Image 1 (tube, rainbow, N blue to C red):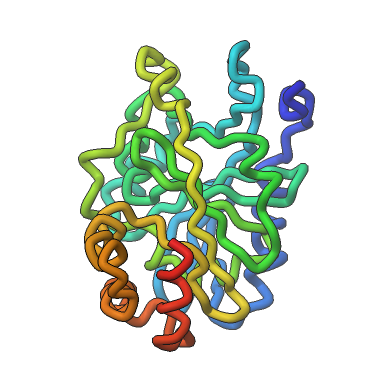
Image 2: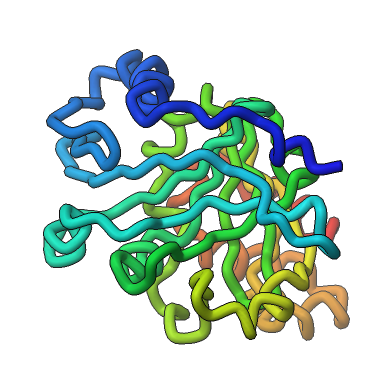
Length: 253
């Protein structure tokens, strides 16, 4: 049975407190205003952040499916027209885990429906370990990031590395008032893209285009060339990784 069907929802002001408990540990964080959503800055970059409880999606045939929902709020119109990034976080209080969906898409979906749902799974959330960002790819192309609350500071330190803006047209979300595509969106392709935060290492390559690009090199056993291409692709995202690290990563593909 989905334990999220019975869990008591955490109040908005408590969700803000849970976030601030971690972010206040960083001198880069400044709380500016609001509750849910709230306005903040990190490393002098401003963000709107909205945290909602993750709950059961109440699907009889997909009992382990969870979701967080964007309601309609007057302040969302202001946020949508602002130049600042909007971050939608789902909070799993059972596992003390956040789920972040593509924030470019989340901002586009503000106030487009009575409740716009963003999905996850209970077993995704239970897999998350401290010090790692866990990524799960959905059939619709979305790749939400799951991480422990204790890693919030590192999340904002690495926020620019999680979501590209080039594939937005390929990603579709459904609202509760349009469920006909829900079944398709709930068919997950399970892939991990794990990052070792402490050691600054990429643990697994899941970028489809990159994998296609290096496939000929792997088939012809040109490991060094493949490793160089992967290193160039990620550029300075993982500065602690040396060529030998990229080679080891490629060997495990």
